[in-house]
Image 1 (spheres, helix red, strand yellow):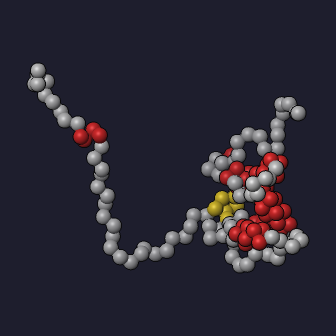
Image 2 (cartoon, one colour):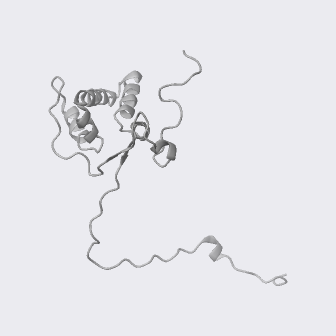
Image 3 (cartoon, one colour):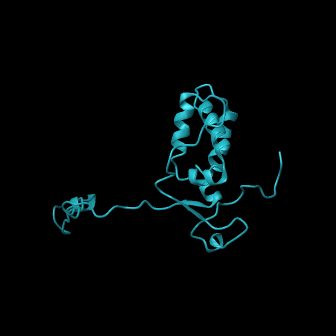
Length: 159
């Protein structure tokens, strides 16, 4: 086991609000991914015959915002290997090393918060439609607290 020294993922992940993290470095700036996800159908499955569960996962993953970058970078094979590993890790008798591999894939493909930060990706806020038609909601009244239920007793009474 190695000791001391820097590791590839040591230290806190970059913060998009930090001035230092937003400077153009060798990794480049932050990339904003569309909140609505990647449009269109999933690419063709690149591995051997998939199981039904693998196809379901494949379709779901290619609709995520991160899939925009995977497509740009040609990561179909990496995503397919993740899908196959995830389907195996879901089994009740799955080995621990397979589950650890899933965690590694989550980070490298930007499917975890740490992975999104390390890849310098952020998801754009969802585009809200125009104001919905209908009545304007009323202000919510404050619920009584425990302090409101206490009764003030003047000093000198009740003895």
